[in-house]
Amino acid sequence: MRRVYFDNNASTPILPEVFDAMRPYFGEHFGNASSIHHHGQETRAAVERARESVANLLGCRASEIVFTSGGTEGDNLAIFGLTKPGLTKPGDHIITSTIEHHAVLNSCKQLEASGCEVTYVPVDGHCLVDPDDVRRALRKNTKLITIMMANNETGVLQQVEEIAKIAAEADVYFHTDAVQAAGKVPINVKQIGCDLLSISGHKMHAPQGVGAVYVRKGTILQPMLYGGRHERSRRAGTENVPGIVALGKAAELAQNALQNGEVAEMAAMRDQIENVPEWQRRAASPEYHKHLFRLHRWRSAGHCARPQGTRRLDRRGVLLGSNRAFSRAHRDGTLARPRPR
Ligand SMILES: Cc1ncc(COP(=O)(O)O)c(C=O)c1O
Image (cartoon, rainbow, N blue to C red; front, side):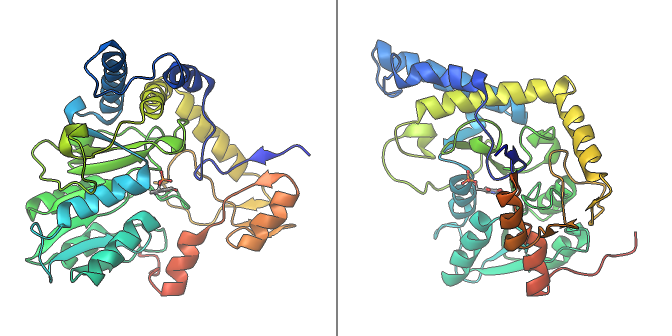
């Protein structure tokens, strides 16, 4: 059966150029990037080139990039790195939203279990966080705001610049999970004004198991792993050189695609698909990102917001993700009525 893959937010295929770039680091260039001999220095140079590429994609210095094992680790490093005992105390406060990925939501739950207080800001009928809700949630002892840049299921882009301003005015750290945004919309961390931002390789045509976090210069981040002084003591462990090289290459390709109109073409294709009369687009936020389209109802196949709809389509060769962010927000009663605009 011919299968059509529409689930690139779950994972993307590795691009041939990315695979070609990483391949030598499985074989001839196998050295440990911490070794001071030739083989080590060769892989060290490759890691640092990749760091430059990722930094270029995000608009920061190479020294502000920390490589990780992916988005989950990046989100955990950002959240726990800023809230470890010593940096926070029981009763300290964190603000997040109800529609974050589990990497953020479950980290926040864990913080609650260790005595921090967490406010889960709701979203409106367009799946948008109102920055004023974030402002109203601030307390004297708020330590961190973590709100995602693009949602993995609805594609809605949050107003992260505005939220970053609110955080800066209150002297609170701001982290954004940009796993679904990186490579698909332009990102400039300086323009956003965030302190931390996490990305993941396998959402942008690099392999699964590699990612990066932007950590603004001067941010005091406690490591989660204890070991060597890798990644300037922010993330211990021998680097995943092939993965990092692949992420660097994917970052270069993504930057080209953003500049040469490929991403805009993708947006046009998405619009075409969404406008197929039988496929009804529901949530109509103008601010959702270019790669994500939402098939809420396929008349003959059922509702894709439910797993059974997704499974039914799978049997016909159409591979979709199911839409749980809205469902979860509905279930939890945190999806507010659309506000008049
Ligand atoms: C928004 C978001 N954050 C974090 C993650 C976790 O990333 P990873 O799969 O690299 O651990 C995902 C993965 O689906 C995601 O969509």
